[in-house]
Length: 103
Image (cartoon, rainbow, N blue to C red; front, side, top):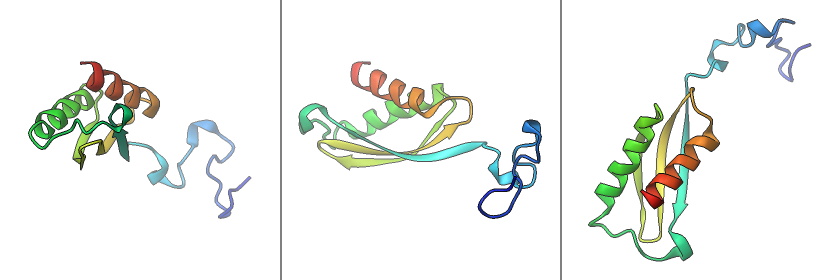
């Protein structure tokens, strides 16, 4: 059975998923994560941003992912990440939040 575009993605064989459309095979995904400080306290100062973002980049690297860009303001941070195909997004987010907030 085809999808909405009339393409047969599975071809009746689960081992052939995405064979007709090779771009469906996940190698990495890009996400923008936004984290706020507890109670939106203005804790992220320009002085600590480089160290904070480097630390988060290290957490991502340990999870085979990459921090591509980071920014934000005193009470929240935007992270553009490239997620590895070897980790679930929920696990990656949990690790970043847990480790970055509690070291």
